Length: 354
Image (cartoon, rainbow, N blue to C red; front, side, top):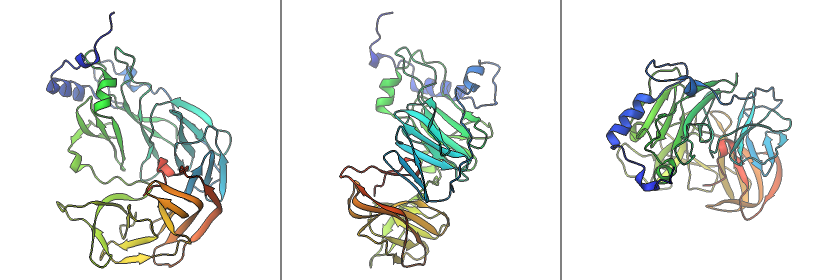
């Protein structure tokens, strides 16, 4: 077959494409008599389930191939580019593949060609955009497919390809213009942006039909650092949540308990009362501070560094935990040095950035 010009591949009218894609979305455990669901429902890989000795609630960070979970360290080869820590082990990405360790040597799980991992709020479900196992277009590009797995059992919970009909699609060309994105998980569903299906979707974990949602209606999805929010700076140095429709140029996070705000752009150990916006400065032990995440509703952790910028901490660095209402933070682990190019990662692959 002669090669097809890439730009000529998107032949179907967009409305027909979206309708076909939505009609073709299939969740694991749901079969449509009008289509062959077996290939879609088949799990190309499952997760190992381990019994690690570390505390999954402890602060977690990696520098190169050394992953720290509280006071314990794991030597991972290859080094992680993104990771999540669960009660059943560490799942991480390296060189486009998913890996696993519960304290021993890393085990290759599968090639996935993605860069981000997501955990549900209860730590039970792992979500990612699998770009290595979906159906292929005429040029050999795999359809990006949202996948959710149960980390306690290793089983696939959801695999939701937008369509099997790729005859009129050039996925590489499409993905250059509109990237497929796994936005995250709440307790009941995954949320994704799928350019093939033509929008933003809520994918229920119980096997119910996918739902189209407006991007503005996607809930704030809790991550390692809390719930992403927009902030408004107050006169006098305070900070509050931006109101609905209020213009905001500041991003930040709301704590898991809903009572504290942390501004993404600030590199000092300061949190703000979510009720009245009052600033509370804490002594992190060094000049710069970069939020890593929350241990519980009252305790956050991050990197305290002698030098830093919007690109991340450099030089002498130590991870500390800070408790709301207390003035001084506590050191976790030992001090380490960072080169000019940041190599410090926090859970879910979040780099130590502003």
